[in-house]
Amino acid sequence: MTETYNPAQQKVIDMLGRSSDRPEIPTGLADELRADIENSLLPVMHLLPDGSSYEKRFFLNKQGVTNVHSCEGFFIGGQGEFEWTHANCKGTIVHKTIEVSINLRQPMPPTDLVEESISRLSNDSSKSISEFLITLDEYDRAELVGECSGLFTRFTECFPPIKNAWIPQVESSLALNLAGNRIRIGGKVDLALGRPPDKVIIDFKTGHPSLAHHDDLRLYALIDFLALGQAPRKVASYYLDSTDVHQEDISETILRSAARRLQDGLVRAIELKLGGAEPVLRPAALCRWCAISADCPTGLEYLAQKNEAEGW
Image (cartoon, rainbow, N blue to C red; front, top):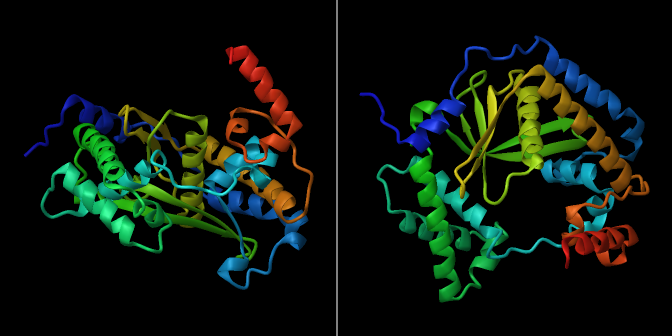
């Protein structure tokens, strides 16, 4: 029996489906890109920890790569201590709800699923979000359940039902070890469908689209490519509130670009964090959230000019 999709679900199917003109990925490209990255690390090898344990590796994730390419001052000390808030915890809760919903034998009402996800996250002391969730009063918890239920319901209305035949992988970890295991590039994919070479990697997002989202997914495609020797067919950001899908076919050009971005960012991150290099300041929107902006003349000047231009 043929599956019937509503127009929003069909749009996702059409955008993520196979195309007849898939770009060719040259044989041996994965080995070439890995060798290029390894060679770029030679000048900074003496700075790296010995890698004798997981804790002694130099670790970099997608946010770190983005930050070092944005403002090096922000990368070094501008992020501050992470704090869970009502706004930033919604993505984690909805992701958890989607993860559970895919594997349920019997469907549950969205609110019940969200409630269960919050309860599970609250009781998992290994996750930092638990400390935030258990402090919520009844009103704040109810408000959070309502907002997350709305986002999850929107997802079920607009994203096609995920079949087991699509081989879904939810919250799956990706890792790339370099320099004899002294460096680890890590990440976590919200949803992957299919197996290489037909694999599609999807990130679920709340909020506004950003160019950084494209870079994040290209990095994931690169890590998967270097680990498996086969690139995913496509990557996509799915925006839960607007139901927009931003997708991109993975090509040789994209993989080379992602490798160069990782290579440059990784070397610079090591120089800054381990070699004490002087950070290059690049004022931008991040200045509004930078923990050291009060002591950064470059950032203060940028914010003053920005506020004056916007009439603040």
